[in-house]
Structure formats: structure tokens, C-alpha cells
Image (cartoon, rainbow, N blue to C red):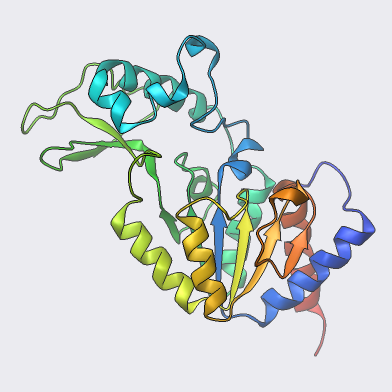
Length: 261
């Protein structure tokens, strides 16, 4: 696992120690992850600008409205995003979450990220609330396929019905993927402990799932580089970036596990 760039301050280390104790006692843990986690790997959010597309507002390309107006432009935009994401690597935060999956009896990642970096880090139990940039699908007949970094979406129509294939992501002006949301809801209702990483917890659909988990008695741990982004139901706050806080969390969990009872 990659080491964090800087040592964790004493105050934060105590918060991490408390969080590690809570995780050690839990059998069912859910991590909700958002754009802030992938930003540490250099992945811009869907609302961020790309250098070659400065003349366009992101909403023109990352929306149902934009796709219906100009599907070819939207697909070219996603070609560029996939090539950019293909150069990114999982950071120490992604790797720590993958390690937690091996340490906790039942551990799931529910993510709003579309980049696949969590799976690339080794996680197996991942539900993608907003779909994946590595898939496309037909909005008319449901045909879908996997994509690689060099696959072009720019002039591609469905081989079944001839309709434009769209990126296999969920845009801000449409609902989260039903299967992933139902899995996330079930996980929230069963969870004993919830980690929020790279998301303030106030953005839907994570906000609803977080409140559901809290209502069923789950402890909420928030990893927050910016304390103003801490969700209100958080019980423990780890004040720093995921790439520093989560490796320290795993380190302390390993130390506790190694100690004789």
C-alpha cells in the first residue's frame, strides 16, 4: 500500500484510533465514496472543465439534455474523459478501502464515482450509484457493452436498433441506477458503521442512504479534508485527505489486531 505523503498530526491520530476501534468491533461496514477521493488521483469531477473543452459548460455534455441536443459531442467529451481517467491510478485512500474489505467480515463500497479506480485498487464489493465511464448503453433497447481506454464513442450507434449509444453513467438530471441504489439501501439498513469518503454527505443519493443508515443505528465516520463539508450525522471526523487518513486507519487497525487480548 502507498504511504501517505505526510505524517498524521496527533489530534487526527487520536480520532483515527477511535475510528479503528469502532471498525474493529463492527461486522458490517459500508463506505460511501465521492469525487473528493478520486480528485486525489487527479480525476476531475464531471462538473469540472477539461483543457480542450474550455468553450463548453460541463452541463452541456454531462446531462440528458446535452446528449439529446448533440449526442456526438457528448460522446467525444466522454472519449476525452476516459483517456484522462485511464492515466490515473488508485491513491492510498482507494488502497486502504480495499484493505478494509479484507479486514472486515462484510465490507461494501457504495460510490458515486464513475472511474473504476476503487475496483482497480482491488475492491470486489463495489456498487456504482452513477454507473461507469467504462460502459455504454442504448437508451432505447437496453443494449450495453464494456469499453477500453482506446475505444471511441464518437460515431457509435446501437448494433441492435441503430439508436445513439450513450455513456453508461448517471447524469445529475436523472435518477441513480436502480440496482445500485437498491443495493446501497439494503447495505445502509444493515450497516453497523458507515464511512463517508470524498463526499460531504449532503448530495443525493448518498444523503438519503446516509440518513437511512443513521436511522437504523449505524455509527458514521467522515473523512473530511475540509471540516465545513462534514455531514451533520457524523459521529467521528478524521480531519484530513483520504490518502493520509485511511492508510493510518488501516495501520492502527492492524496494530490492534496484532495485540493479544
